[in-house]
Image 1 (cartoon, helix red, strand yellow):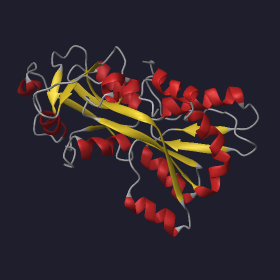
Image 2 (cartoon, rainbow, N blue to C red; image 1 turned 90 degrees about the horizontal axis):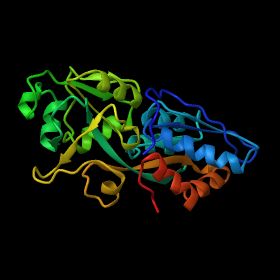
Image 3 (cartoon, rainbow, N blue to C red; image 1 turned 180 degrees about the horizontal axis):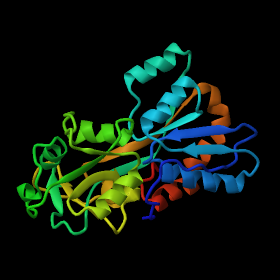
Image 4 (spheres, helix red, strand yellow; image 1 turned 60 degrees about the vertical axis):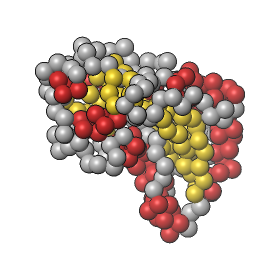
Length: 271
């Protein structure tokens, strides 16, 4: 698994794609993967450019709607109201799955807690549980970190782990995934969630159980065999008008070479 930079608000990478410049914007979860894919593509096609920028899935999709970006990278499915806005603008939506991610729940390595159930995670992130002793840890305040609401990971966590309940008002918002890693690594009582590729040795990924019995650690293998319960697809969303220009890059990203990069970065290949 590749180590990812601590703070990734926006990384701009230039690669080639025919003569037209394209912009891929959105999910910080997808950012390290798309960065590497674009770098690999550029070695084969050095004549034009793709710009890759993070900021959150919602930001990328908003850019797709207003026409400021060519492609949105997203760690969540596009919403019905977002689809409607594209339709209202006369745009035909297209999509491709770039790979799959295991959403890792991370704590400080000094925390003796090594596993939590889905219900315990819901209770922590909604503010019902506020001390680690309530879930088998030390008598220590839980400091909860989350992504901002524009993040696809924020919404995926809320929908699939928190039973669509609201985050507690005390939850601290981080502007990027790397900021969560940094904060959790520096705060003994902290907990947060990140894409699998962001997990580093300065944080501890917890084993998770949705049935309260079988606890599984996040890993590429456990996501691939579907034993880890918090997995999700990662998407490219684009409109039909850029399809022809984007196709050479998508063909590369979904080729054996491109899918090898998915695994190298720390995610699960589509193929």
